[in-house]
Length: 383
Image 1 (spheres, helix red, strand yellow):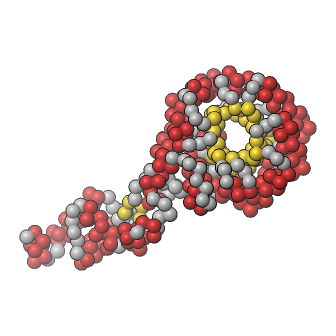
Image 2 (image 1 turned 30 degrees about the horizontal axis):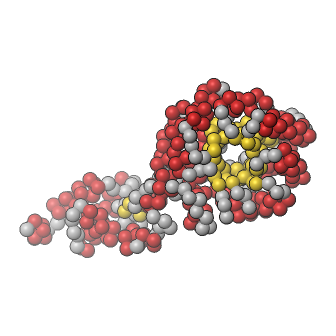
Image 3 (image 1 turned 60 degrees about the vertical axis):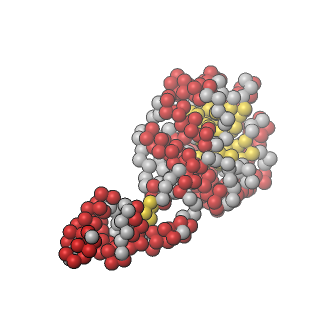
């Protein structure tokens, strides 16, 4: 199974409310994506103006291994702006659902087909490779969607992007729709999913299973409304759940996720799948004990695989095994009795503070424990 990723962090990701990358950030993210191993970077929308075009031109000049593409409407001016950026690949997007054609465009289905024809001819006449996007395909009339797809193939498009623009699909429906389309037309399929119901990653996996050879994603799922399919989730789920290794340098995932979070002014939640710091943080006594004995008991893959480290967190739910292991890091060997006594203090402090304890606080609790236990034991310990 060959699957390739189109990263659209710099286009669809940046369309998230309040996100605005500058030129240096866009180029840096593009370099990181190229090193990570994506097949194509959707660099932006040239029709936005000179500032966007400068960033795209800089990305084109950086000499990446992956393709650099630009997003366009079915408008010659958009395509001319893309040409001015020096890209060889363009994506031409067209609304295909009745609600979008009627209310957004105020046009007919036939008008969409004719405009697509004109735009594709214009792009290809200028030597561009073209992919065609069926915007809001998940709410399109299947008969018209198939007509649209046949036209895209006839015009010479490399592939068709099936867009779940408002995230209304579930994995079962996604599989059925993409498998049906794959059976009906000999054209490479690309899936673009949004996360309005929290199903974007699951839908992307279902699309791959149905035969889509390309998947769109963004770092950490950044994007409009609830975002897009998260690249790190798609890549790692394919690798570990489906045995499909895309050859990504996954040890770079945490680094790029952290950079994109800073550049977009967003936090990277500790509980974020794959790259969140809590993925390999163990507090529960049973979990921590298991992870200390064999990390595979509670970890599907090693933290180093995604650029993270394992953490044994000390808090309300910790057990004596974790307490002993933590103090061993400080060079202090605790007996079972000592560990139990300190654990009691740890739990009381964690409840009071409403969080786990850091190293300094643990050392303070230990010193307090030494100070208040019986003189006989204290003097024995000091000797």
